[in-house]
Image 1: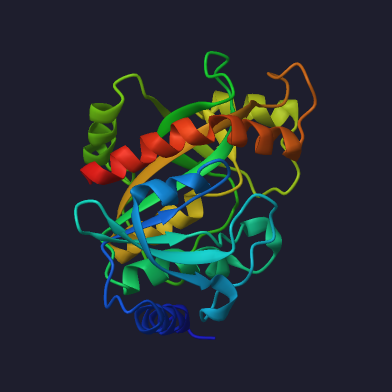
Image 2: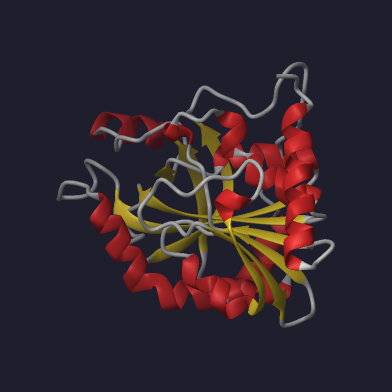
Length: 267
């Protein structure tokens, strides 16, 4: 497979979305992770909902709590938003190309802004479960990249300071931090959590960084926001579980969904 084939597949997906939704182009894309799914209902009017596995290159989600659809939404200010509910995680073993296919598809549909959300472990005890945190930078601990060949991309200001400022206009109390992506699917050991903390991480999870790199390569402006669903191993006094992550997302869902919808309205 050549390095151009992932982009041809993304264009095929974009063409399919345009035909199926009747919307020739979109302006903003959102990837809604654990806890963030209800935001789509508050952003605007749903124009069309597509089963993800009917769109070229996409498949049904492998994780409980993720939605297997792609939605076209007309926002309150007349923009067309593409909500990608079918996130592929690196640990699924489908390859990095599959992980970032949604991002490349969003760019092919005409999007200029990408909103990345996730549920994550927190390293700061002051950020209790249910706390939203802006991502200002990341550490990629997957030992992988979505870029192939001699493709050199500057990541200095990967997470847009302009968009973080807009978010703080909505909620001035929002904190920000550095997100570290581990490969997963197992949760990190207490020693790995301390390692991440010592190299500068405030948040840890299993998504987002690879997608953000691919987004920068395609020219998208990136906004990232995490929901702390649990304190990380060794910081939390209790063992970690996926059910804990889902429960924290359910509890915080209405509040963070409203927050994200209000941020999107400003973009």
